[in-house]
Length: 342
Image 1: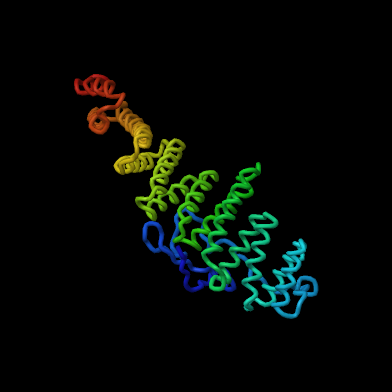
Image 2: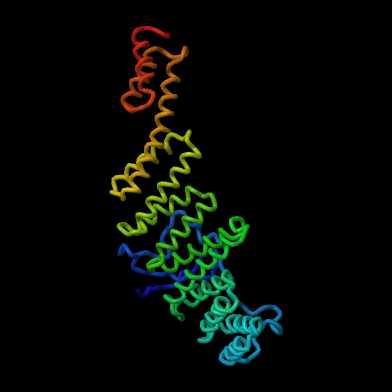
């Protein structure tokens, strides 16, 4: 499926930087734009954009070796073919910086990115160069191919990061933002949903659970009825439960989690998923039950009236008729009505 792309949108934070606006038809047949909001993503406008390549101060060293872009491209290719990777990189960069509007510039930029990808296996550098290509030369390259290569590179960045002990500290944010950049530049691609899943999982690894929930929820909204949406539903439920366990004293959150789990159960999940959701719902309701019981006990004190305690216990029985505290509450309610214990 071809990704259509329209006008270049200049970012206010850097007038020299342009973002290719990707238009595409998502699996749910809803059109998405690169400028659409993506809850749970970092705001790209506040992230330092790549600097436009320009001739350096020491042009005698970093500038092009040849007098025109065609010969410079030939020179860069010769260096790459001879295995002189550093010279090739320098030659490609010099061409893009010196003759950015030439037909050879996007070709050189792509070959530089390919050099990092195929020869160096420097995934972060390769991703940055592919992104530069889409951001500055979206109309002069094979947009579909480069967007997919960015996605492949982001996955390799994540796999590489898993092997590094300090991944969560040093690399997680960079990799997550790489996947976010892929989604924004190719919102209608077949791999966009998986890229969003990667973002959500990385948010979890970073401990940003509320952000992960936002991304999973957005996946469900963008791809209704798709298999990825069903998986996102379960992942969102699990993350919501993790948050609830960390903040069990938060009654509004417990109410919200319970409501979400009921909604998830109403979506007719599979047998295993249903059993898991029911278990989580029981746990979430128990949190509310404990809170309600403590509230009722609060009214059953010397500083409160008998009527307020009776009302609190009666309300508890209505809301939680199957509670483990029902027996105790009924006994205490009977005692209060008989005028005992106050």
